[in-house]
Length: 323
Ligand code: ADP
Ligand code: F6P
View 1 (cartoon, rainbow, N blue to C red):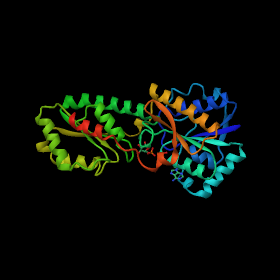
View 2: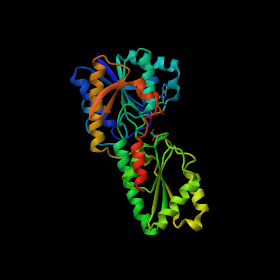
View 3: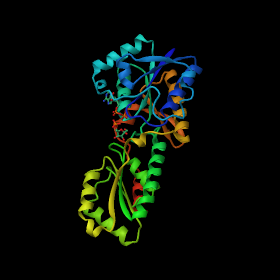
View 4: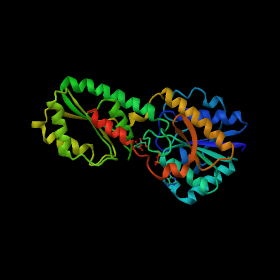
């Protein structure tokens, strides 16, 4: 291949710039040119791409977000729109594409591969819901951001003897909630992968924490958990008299996606970007780079996106012992 493309798609996250930099420099090293596609799949559809040189990707690794821009482009699910995208890639002499993104973006990449256009994926989503990789780029930084918030909230929670509901991102996955709750010493962690507990049980556990003499009660709620943060808040507030703790709520929101990437995300982005590019230039397609143990492997894109990555049941058990 003489020229490849690279794009970031879906929700942004820390470490994407390290991926783009690595793809660009690895390709240039191997004698191939790189087209940076702006705004994810939207840029393919609108023919918004430009050649990148080594200097273009200098000094970006320490910055959060993505220097190419990203977007959600629902119309990409339409095969006619994808044909337009492939036509633009061909017109620009792009012979293969590195797709950096989450489950949806990698599904889009798989569709291009199935239409005969070579694609290699890099898992990048703070949700860590992509199968066949231990971790995705962006997760480590997001977790540290959440942990920092939990630590800060604990300061104020203990000063006032309050219960705090802290809602974290993750879409339909509870990974961020479970890991941050474990590391943050939460009294309770509510994730969509495990049904319940009933609102009454949550209330009893708050009372129990109070009776055991705890100075605060931290409940981490994954945004995908049902019946949701609002319902728990209303229920606990309705039991104001017997709860012991006053209740406050913090929804962490998009600050979880921003910030300087951690050492781990910069390194993982660099490693995955490099391996993905080598694979694409060696003729691979329909695969994703996955971390398994400490080794980067090429795994099938189809397997990676066909089901959500399950939570480790041992960590769920551990979180219950540690309350
Ligand atoms: P993420 O990649 O972070 O999971 P989304 O699920 O929003 O984010 O997906 C990002 C983009 O990937 C979508 O806006 C769309 O352009 C593309 N995409 C998602 N699902 C599909 C699909 N089934 N077919 C083609 N493209 C898709
Ligand atoms: O997939 C990453 C993610 O941050 C999810 O955790 C969250 O549900 C979603 O994206 C939010 O998307 P948006 O930025 O479009 O509001």
